[in-house]
Length: 282
Ligand code: C2E
Ligand code: MG
Ligand code: MG
Image (cartoon, rainbow, N blue to C red; front, side, top):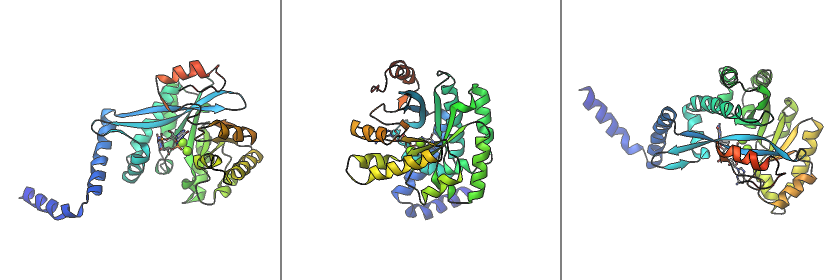
């Protein structure tokens, strides 16, 4: 009897589930499977210091190799993972895996990890980080956490205290996608970020002759005054690099230098680019 009841309930709801909702539900199930069966993988994109003229680290970027659907972009599944709470176990895995990889790299090469808003708001985050550091033997100073402005939307005081407690672990903190959020400038005053990552949209606009140049100048000037480093995301062409260099941007990241590469390829990139003074490596 229970079985037939369940069945009729299912039939009652089914028409309400449009194709998109069904795909979402399936994707959620698949995310659980992916976590269990190891379908996630980290790729790494070089971060390049313009002052030192060398690679100083890599950003870890999650990849999902779906057995039927092929590779699915994080922009597609991270929001769903956030909504369903699956970002917590996935995010823990990313932190552990990133630290494990970085512990195999040279001592002066760091790793940056994206922390989603929900993950940031979880009390267990500091513990996860401590455990990942001790399991891998990675120095805390070689781990950088990338957070976005959206963490400031709710409860600024608690956000600041979380940021300070993470900083006390000895890790560094970068503000990702800077300039896309709302009321960006006030956040820069409220916490001493180690690095500000200028959103790709501004770098892109440099090639379109808009006012992005002025915005980038304003950001680098302000960050400099506040003692923070700046990194420009999504640098694809030499003309962008020239402007960024002139405006005193400290770091760049983008296809011009290298696309994200697999964990194995990191060693190839380090081998070439390390002495290669900003030559394109991948
Ligand atoms: P993000 O943190 O801002 O990462 C930079 C994104 O820009 C990456 O996309 C990278 O592949 C892409 N990119 C780098 N250089 C260029 C360029 O020159 N041109 C263009 N057009 N794109 C470039 P990806 O890997 O698809 O990741 C997208 C977003 O997904 C990330 O943006 C981040 O918000 C999120 N994400 C990725 N991995 C993770 C993760 O492990 N955890 C969490 N919470 N979010 C992640
Ligand atoms: Mg990032
Ligand atoms: Mg970004």
